[in-house]
Structures are given as C-alpha cells and as structure tokens.
Length: 318
Image (cartoon, rainbow, N blue to C red):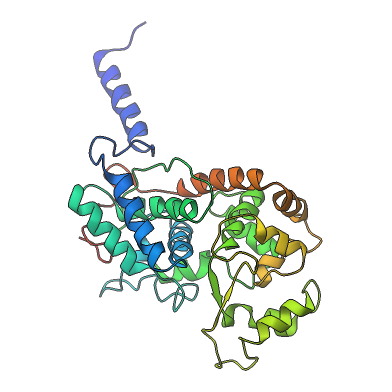
C-alpha cells in the first residue's frame, strides 16, 4: 500500500525539519562565501596585536557552549529584562575579547549583512585562534542562531571552576554531552592563555601534594598570599610555551606543574592519568582528539531553523 499525497508531503516536511536542525560546514557557502577568510583575517589581526587574544577568543566559545548551548549568550550585555553572563563568577574580570568579537562581526556584516550569527562567529574564531597559534584545524559546523536572552545563574552553575575536583570536571563536561576523554583533551586549551592570581592562589600556598616546590615558589613571586593583593596579576597556564598551542600542558601536569587545582586533578593518581600520559607523548593524538572534542562541544544545543535570531549587534538582542 503506497503513501497518500498528504503523507508524502508530511514526510518531506518532517525530513526538512530534521535537516534544518543540523549544523553543517557549508551552511554559509552560498549566503556568505567570504565568511571564513573574513573571520580569519580579523582573528589574525587581533592575535598579531596581542597574542593572548587567541586564548581569550577560544575561552569565549567554551563559556558560551557550557551555558544553555552554543548560542552567543555570553556576548549579551545586561538589559532591563535579564542579567547576562558577563558578570557571572567565572566571567567577571576574566572573560575578555568582546571588542574583538565586535570587530569580527563588523567585518562579516560588511561582506554579508544580517546573515551570520554571533554564535557561529565565536565557533570560527575559536578554531582560527587555535590554528594560528600552532594547533590543529578542523571543519567548523555552522548554522547556529543567536539567543535573545542570557542567564547569569546558569553561567555560575554550569562553567567548571578552577577549584574543581576530577569528578566535578567529569560531571560538568558530561552535562554538555562530553566524555571524560573529551574533558581531558579540551583541558589542553590551557596550553595557551593566562590565569589571574585569584584562581591559583590557594593551590600555590595551601597544596603540597602533587605540586612541584620550585614551581610554587616561582608563582608566589607574582601572587601574594593575602586576598586583595595582586588578585589580577597574571601567570601563564602553560609555563613552557604559553603562546604556542601544543601538548606541553600535559608534560607540565606529569611534572606537577599544573597552575590550577583543576589542571593538576587530571594527573593525580586518578582515572585521567592514562590519557594525560598519552597526550604528553603523542602530540598528534592530542591534536586529533582536541579537534574532535571541539566539534562535539560545538554541537551542544544550538538554536537552529527559526529559533533565536541573527543578531545585528552581538551585545544586544535585535
């Protein structure tokens, strides 16, 4: 017995709906063919001015995806109707690069106005930052739309803390569909970037197990014990090569030189030790797993189809 015409139409509509909800690497290939080189050029320019910006842009994508999906919500300023994520504990005085995102958005708007979401710009910028600083590249899946709201409470609850235990890290990543192995690979993003004294003070003064003594001493020189003194002083997350994306982060962990408590938790006699050892000795495996995990993270609950919007200004809903 064949389908009736109405059944066929319904089936086609159903499959169109399924397809529209899928991200794809060629989503803008006809609507904005100059998108990728435009973003790449703007990211390259920002990193040329300040190398640290690559890590900052990568982090914005992370902190976006961990809070109600990869929807550009981290970029929204507070409004009368919601308190945004910029002032949440993991982001305040810490998340940065918003002006650079504005610049990238402006460049994209110049070549194809009203087409590309801020959420997608974050995803592309993260990939380009990693690659420009020496790391792998990957095909970024696109087609996300932007949220019209943000949640400070969700940011406070969802983003992993620098004080997290291994089990807390596994849980945080699991909540956004990422495995323990993905978590170890994505933690390798700490091969670049800087951390504020407030995030590692307790580790360098209070921890003795699994902390290299000379490393602790060197970090204390720029991070006073007293709270309120030097809180914003910076230290590189990767002491060996802080501006190059490579696998030195894992070598540091094996040498008990993880800057954050949460970093060293990955190599502390627990379930993540074997993966850390693997990545420390096999940079190509780390690169491949990192790229795969980034794609997986980017798939977290995107707004697609007619959900959300394409923001004109990344800082506010249309």
